[in-house]
Image: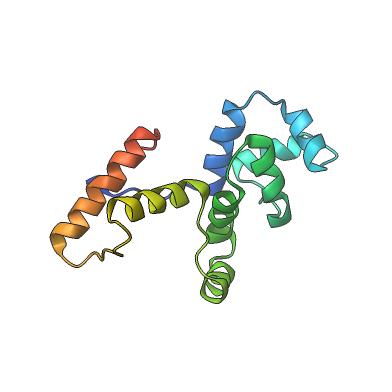
Length: 141
């Protein structure tokens, strides 16, 4: 796969900044709802100067109307990847609402036959499928 078509992971603070900027809620209201005394902490999170405490991630997800599993996974992969791998290995992969919908559709289309990605053609088809999903959700390579 060429680097041109590779989907690069987005830094957590950049993702959070985009979602905060796109929301209608004021940073002062957000800070208050999340239990922070001063609203400038939200700016510090957006700029990546301060890490969001992991226990605050579900609150951010609620305020920003995001999937809490996806947001926590994203934060943990950046802030503490070893811990995330240990949790994932122990409890299994976390599946977001959107991923569950994709999985349900694959199961429906395959008539629950548990299809495997077994060839280069299968991998390329899967890559095309994911790129189409990313384009439709506004996330480009």
